[in-house]
View 1 (cartoon, rainbow, N blue to C red):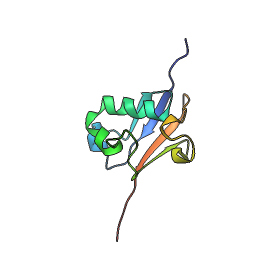
View 2: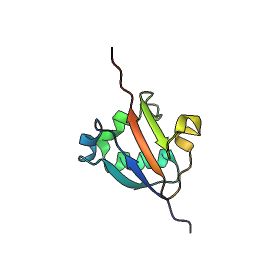
View 3: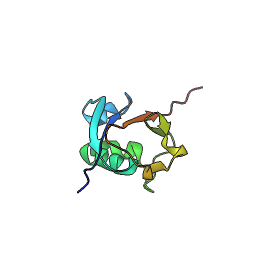
Length: 95
């Protein structure tokens, strides 16, 4: 029986209060979407800040796996492997 990969997820400062102050968390999932779902189960208040009502990652949230933007890969369906690093960044707007 294959094991589900562990991924290290780095959270931006704006999301850390919704994850009990954690900068990094180690979560399981076979895809980016599964890891995000696990993150949302662990820290329910973070879900609305990452995922829209349609189930997609909000457009102002950027997610990288091993420094590659998942939007250039398969989005939520992007496979992950044990030891992968997932970075979540919130887009910053200014004027």
